[in-house]
Image (cartoon, rainbow, N blue to C red):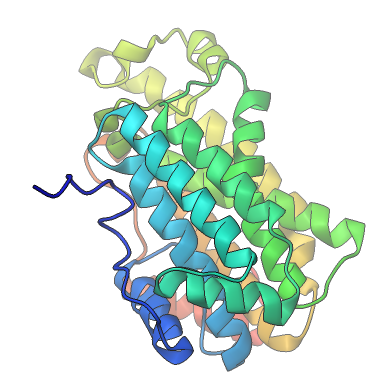
Length: 299
């Protein structure tokens, strides 16, 4: 009898050797299957950068899916350890499966650091353990691992290294991550996760068990307004990164900025109703954001 597949086994078929063009095509198919608040690898970027971002996204998506799997914590952590081991083997020249074939080529071709990818895995381990966050600073620490590495890699792809731009990128990525957390409040509560800082719950007279109770809807709405406004400050700090790099990158960053901020406004407007309906952007809103990005408006 074959052993049951781990969460990692279920996400990337292993059939080697994998031709490089097929590996990148596999990663791009993962990008197309997932709708995000922002363009992951838009057509405005050149093929080289677009393929690279697809490989990075596919790696992150695979690990995120493992952390979110309906499996015991120990099994998910073991699967994330397997992904880390596969990453290190890929960097050493023995990639296994399409995601790691594409990712190894991306890292080598663009001289990317591996540390941001390891930081991502650290944050996914926090997800697998359903960690809670006593204070706002603890949540920001989580975002430094779960979101900021992506921005750092995007800038590294474009050889952007100045400190001010890196800090602005970190602020934007953290804002995007927080927006996604508020947007996904209902989903995370169903999984047993809580990303709202405990000190903020206490400030608004709430406990964890109160969040889904009708009697506490007004307090939850006030709490979400508070979190959204703190998140919006991070968007403002991160705005400067939308003016960095070549034209195609600026379009991507402006669309990313505007898309995330538009979702944040929907969360603030809906308040406790995010538990009933996940705020998203429709086609009209996405088209408007893209138009604004093209003409140089970042929201």
